[in-house]
Image 1 (cartoon, rainbow, N blue to C red):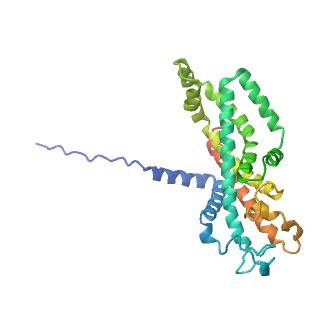
Image 2 (cartoon, rainbow, N blue to C red):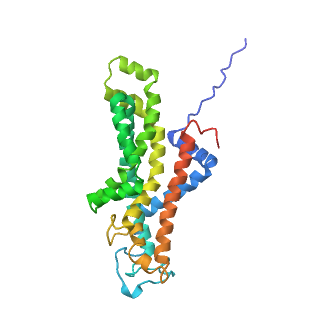
Image 3 (cartoon, helix red, strand yellow):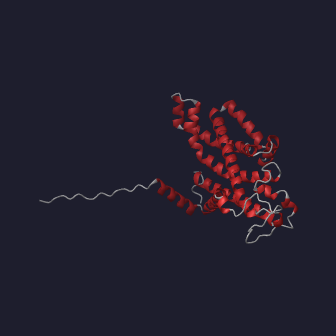
Length: 300
């Protein structure tokens, strides 16, 4: 009498959350190499901001007139400025200021713009008409000009600088998010939620906002580079950070234009830092747009 033997069953291995994250990261690097380069630049910038006290060889506020306009050397890789301060140290500490102001302004502006766009699309009618005309008025001004006007009215402080940079981002985000919210508004489960008596706030936050997260993340990432550049521009014009804060834009103002021939490194290295930061965020933002926008997924 033959005895039936049980066949061993294959156990399906479900990858962990970390494994899925690493796989997604590897796929992103392979398919979007330029985005990976941008992400690497941003990662280095974040490391410099977080570990500035450990990385920087000097105190960013330490004055030494005997080292005034010292050229790049082994002890001072980027040279020194008009007060004898080490530029390499100040650029590292400047990454922290750029990231804090850039992230804060972009998050506030993109989040506020997303809420305005969703409310405009969902409410429709006269509400949508009034909101969109206000958005049109704000969009008529270039971002830097509007930020400059707001900063000059509010005054010179870090909080006011964040507000001045965030407000011009709101209409740009609202216009893009509104188009996505108009499509989400017509989805079946949104209509069902409204039919069963869900409040407007619940429908917007529970059913519409999750559907506009892709454009929101794209705008948030893309505006980070613009926010850093705007902060540097306002500091250069005297409406941003004040001495002795190690702001990249502030390093370009003051002595840099006056001593461009005598000590060009005073302007070159802060300018390179600003350019790399903006370049990195733009590369990452473009790659995220290509990856998250369903209309662009097939083009790569």
